Image 1 (cartoon, rainbow over the protein chains, first blue to last red):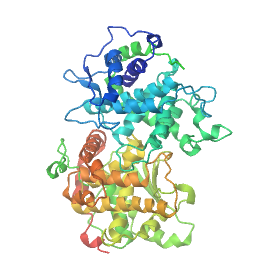
Image 2 (image 1 turned 180 degrees about the horizontal axis):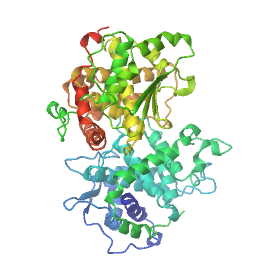
Image 3 (image 1 turned 120 degrees about the vertical axis):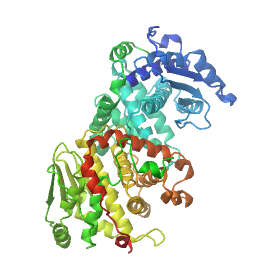
Image 4 (image 1 turned 135 degrees about the vertical axis):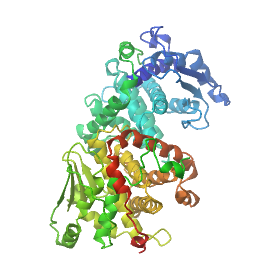
Length: 294
Length: 301
């Protein structure tokens, strides 16, 4: 699966990004696994506040690792995807067809770090599994990278996108993250993403924006997660606990989540799967990329 | 930017104007209001059935009779005929339970379990209550446009479901896009009326939230009425037709969103060509295209 491979790469990259020791990476990726049609760039920020983030990303070779993990993605001979970190002036950069690139902004990475807890936090929804600071940093950046690569892939591979493209990319990100349940990556990245989206939802919503509001993105991400794995994410559903809590998926929404998940999964199988090298994908999926620390 | 000349044809040479399902609704409303219907193409698709259910509430009885006399669903079925439906699509008009539609949701809906597209009598009553400011448009414009827009939307959901169209984003937003895009393939009159009417319906729902002091429900699967207002306008503005330029000039669509609307329209256009057009009988479609559906006189009041 193309996006699984993206996610895998990102998980690895982000472990490095967050400054964790090398031991956080559970296994080095095989050196022959690489997609040379993925181009990368670390664009030097003009704002000195972002300099440490820029340095860390570059020193850790985050995007180089991403190239390896995107190996299963089948692009046409002349096609390339540029993936870059850049200072954008806002947390999100719009994809531009005339200068196509999957861009994750330093502003977003900075915002993610600012909202992350400094110690494990236990939520009613997560029961005995606290939200790890690692997860709250890694998860949202993983989500952002998958999101932006998905947007670029939609365009390059001429994948038909019904519904708003950013919403489709959010759903695809959740679908990808769910594929890593056996490494516990799904739980940590999705819960980490949810933590960030919930924190960001406190800002006034922009109803005219092309994206859904942060609160809507929060619920949609959790809905796809619950729809795909009702055991792992059942704690987020109000009706499955005695005590309701802020941020619960209401029962009315939760009831339709398996169907929402099915739609995204079927959409992937119909429109995207053909662009993924199955053998390379299996190799990518066989590697444990990261261990989340407290 | 997508220009007028491009709008008229696709790469396959197919004119996508007047995609069938949408048009039918306008006819239905015209019939209800005894507006003379335009000449109908001779079209029939055996994969479409229709049912008029007698309402329990006597206040809907006259409407029930009128709709039946005017053969509204039969006419609708003609317009849906060019779609190569793999299974039977059931068109139904019925009185719906009060709880059948969530607040801020039109009472027109497609149900996948029995592959039915239902128009509730209550929806017609809601439309009749719309009262736009004269500067915005006439009541008939918003009624016809609102009805067409929502029926187009639910027809799109039927197409997505029965033709197994991949939908990567939210299905409701996708259906809204398909509705607006289809309307934009018609002549200026139909395009303008459907976009304005659809916008007005969502605005009405949004206004009701404000008046009732109800908070937005961000946990809902559907986009909020205000977002759907903007989404509809954006597709229209993104089509490049000067007809919709005033939405930006008047501030109904903010410039930061408007900048990207051509791209949003292009994505919908590409998805339509790749996933819907292959399932359309082009000859049947030409017959539908040859009909003029709205007369300016229909919309004066």
